[in-house]
Image (cartoon, rainbow, N blue to C red; front, side, top):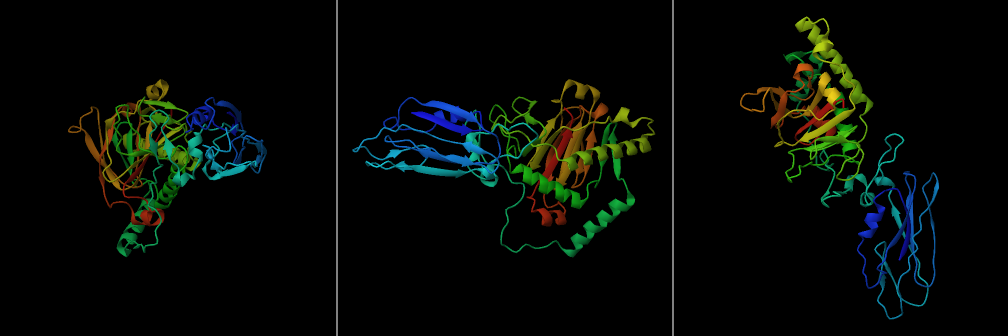
Length: 408
């Protein structure tokens, strides 16, 4: 059987070779000619033919015309049962030539552009829209669905936050804006900015993370080589971090997806938080050059973790960035949104001796300089502590969203 197919993924050969084919009905040899096409949205029209003749068709993507033809030599005789194609419905037997056109709309499941480069994408991930897409682990054939950090929309009547809770949050917002910077230095190079992110900005961050998290490279539950799973769901922005190798890369090994870029508004908030931390350092420590204590950095990586109510992360060090980044002590900047969490930190991987601070929704934690190697982790998520207004506006699941920015 000779097959010619226009695709935009490098895995096409393997995907078609592994198709379920009945050797009694199809020729045992499968010869492939793969034509790479632009990544724009398109509709592929496949045409199968019987032994008597050959048909071809064209697929139009709205931008350019793409030829996508499958010409198949199908063994056929009058007494044989209907021929079943792995690419479409059965071909009926008989004397007359049969043409079957199978239209597969894939425009809703193509990834957004991230610059000028094309994004390798498994052929199997072009089957369903992003909200229903299942990703397959190319190494272990493990299938997983992107995790939605927000609850599904329902027709049930939702109770609005009580007037008391709403007024309390409004007072806190007013206090935050009128009193100015509210922060403290936990140790040299480690700064906590309390209630730094407004509710409105938190809402925008959650909605943006949800949108990105349901697309290619979105939220999934990562694991280690021994099969153990992390107690969280993760999405990488800028570069992918692989917990199995503790290395960064341009693509996620599990499905070949390229991480989305860091949104501009996230980047700007990080830079502002570092600048305000310098103001606090100069004020409280009378340091002449705050950048010597907490260096500046330009984030090109963001790990977005969602901790459910029983989520946690053991004490660890963030030291997988480049040698130059670590040597300079370029900081990690952490945003907390949703339920509050107990955050442990110390000079050793010892929970009993580690210090603890509660990180609440809207807090920003920064550690760099001499604190860059600090061991840190999350031990407890405090349920029902997220701002009611935030939950009402986003339908965020019970748990905590944590964004950590760093420079590779």
